[in-house]
Amino acid sequence: MRIARIVGICQNPRMNETRVIQTADDDSKEAVREAAAVLRSGDIAALPTETVYGLAADAFDADAVAKVFAAKERPSFDPLIVHIATRGDLARVAVVPDAIAATVNQLTSAFWPGPLTLVLPRHPDIPDIVTSGLPTIAVRQSAHPVMRAVIRELGRPVAAPSANRFGRISPTSASAVLKELGGRIPLVIDAGACREGLESTIVSIEPREGKKPVLRLHRAGPVTKEMLQPFGKVEKPKADPGSAPQTPGQLPGHYAPSTPLVLMESARDFHPEPGKRYGLLSYRGDGPWVDLHHWDRIETLSPGSGKLAEAAVRLFHCMRTLDEAGLDTIVAEPVSETGLGVAIMDRLRRASTGAPDDHRD
Ligand code: AMP
Ligand code: MG
Image (cartoon, rainbow, N blue to C red; front, top):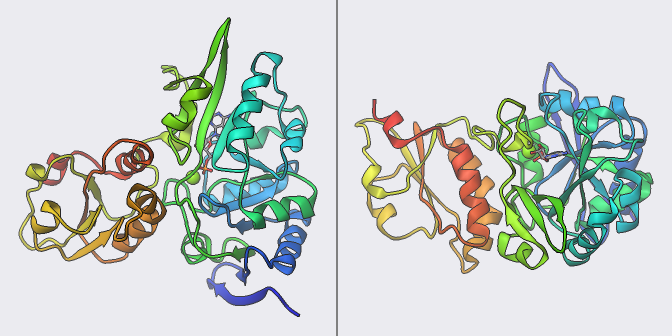
């Protein structure tokens, strides 16, 4: 029985075909074999993870990894996340210093497989292009059964940043991947919508004599500050003036739609211009923000009872839908900055094109 189906071909006249193979998490053998074959041949493929879709290449093949940078138009200074299939594979990509070994063990026991990326000293076999020449590597074990099965079948870790063009909204479905990269990549494995919807939390570990370590939070994500606190003192990354940002994905203007998006901290800041089309990115789909204006379009982050977890899953999908609605401006309502709300507000701030005043003149 064929368990994977080619459900579509996306063809751009100036580019190549992108095959889409649809699969189920628990019945994915053929899709996994196809994806591993593409990666083994030195090419790249978009694969599902529990956070967002990733664009994968064999992490030990510098030429294949270069194709990821080219397809994404990603600058070479922005290093990739490497995915492993088992915790045992960590030693193939990173060298864990004794001083943080216990903490690495605790964090990986608690959160792997799952949406926590650790920044660790890199293994010498990892090509420079993967880490943008940094002495460290970002690594995680994805919880997605298809991603893990592809890595196992390939027998090598994969480098896989989000499967979008640089700076744009991360894809949480195969159709979003096609909009971003259709015609630029040979294969997308479609396993449905991503369960988390936000990129992984990124953490580095600094040991302290006789105390719990400092956990530097490079990117807020599904593993929240509150979840990390039992394992160390959670702090922001050190400011390093004059050098490239440690986490380029954290630059303002990341995760941005093409339509200007304004995150309004207060409804009093909204001063619509006559004749312009405004859309609202609403949290619950009711309340003062909805009543504030005759919106041309409203997308609701948490229409059900999932609250922040549901909002996280739907955030990039709703941003993309509003981006495609022909609006002049997207107005985003703030969510409470606790738990997952920290990561949601982080993405909204980075997607935001400026203070409300910028849009009044
Ligand atoms: P993406 O998967 O596209 O969201 O990008 C991966 C993220 O991981 C980017 O924000 C990278 O800057 C970050 N990253 C990768 N390697 C490192 C590293 N060695 N140190 C800090 N951040 C990293
Ligand atoms: Mg990204």
